[in-house]
Length: 146
Image (cartoon, rainbow, N blue to C red):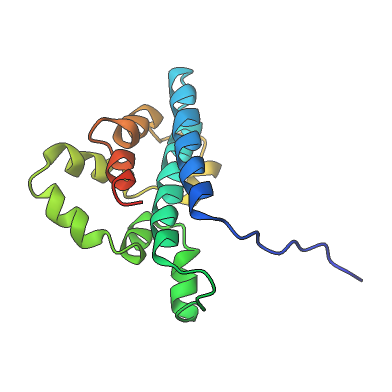
């Protein structure tokens, strides 16, 4: 019996960047349509893609991954873990000390999780979209590092 398992496709940094921007736009459309859960999920997903673009920037072509733990962390969905792998945690911590808007926006975004796509209620997509796409939003901050 053969399985039809597909190998994971290699994602390039530019693809993660494009996905981050596309998912943020889609989240904004859903929020305007009062589709809070979808907006919440896609806005968080845009940050996940943006952080993965930052991680991809750190790798070199033909470089063997540093180890199983590293690879596991790269494929994680936890935004706070991805922030660490991207080497942006300390930079963000330093910046939010003097940037209250960024601190508030990261506070909204940081607890996003991939399982939120299965939740039917309880998430505020409008606030999440604002935290991601605002002038001092999390996506704008990450774009400075990707």
